[in-house]
Length: 271
Picture 1 (cartoon, rainbow, N blue to C red):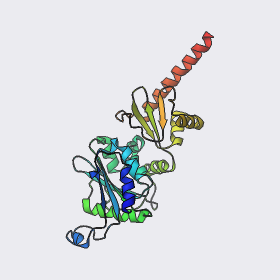
Picture 2 (cartoon, helix red, strand yellow; picture 1 turned 180 degrees about the vertical axis):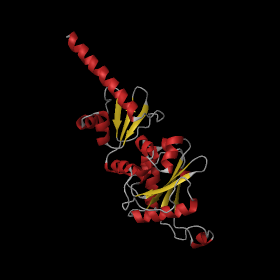
Picture 3 (cartoon, rainbow, N blue to C red; picture 1 turned 45 degrees about the vertical axis):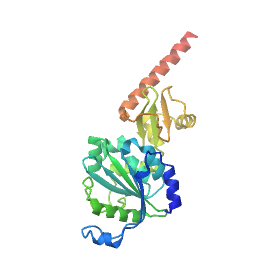
Picture 4 (cartoon, rainbow, N blue to C red; picture 1 turned 90 degrees about the horizontal axis):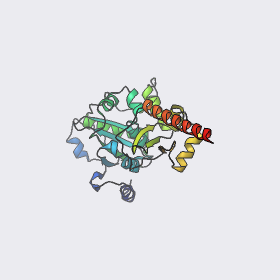
């Protein structure tokens, strides 16, 4: 990634300080030799971007990580960390924030976030140059695993998504999310983001909606049931402190639909 592209990248990031953004080339051989216990393979070039309080700064994540390959590192306030890589960095990182994945995930890092949440969890992105392959991302991931020995990662040998072993439910959910289009659901009554769906298809199924209805309200931006706003992008003037489980959201939708139908019936009887 050349300096011109880096300048374009940083100009689109709405954060308070440019100090969060630093460009790194490959380390010198001397620096590697001074760390004999670290991986002696030079990583590929990358742009490093630090995002504090990652859960609440998804706008910044989207601004730099969509459709790029790279490595991500979550770090907690107590010093615990996790290292991963992906050829779809934005989707992979944001999958950790999805309640459906956290609730069913069987990996140590997902159990940790499900139990403790994301308060004071920072995110460091290492965005690789255009054309970087999954193999290159895995090599860079391994470098940082060797550097950090992440305690939230059980397997300290980096690898691409396992096609050689049975696919876990977590990976099935994750791959469904990659294939689909994530949808944010906002509640005008509380000014909160209340749920993030992995895909349109999953939303249709769980909220009993026709796909044409969803597309209509996504395009218009008008509130469904005079209350809920559907969006393909994060909306900054909504809070993210009141996420609901799918069960709670289904109950609220049922109540709102019941109220709407009762109102329609009452108006028809009064005519």
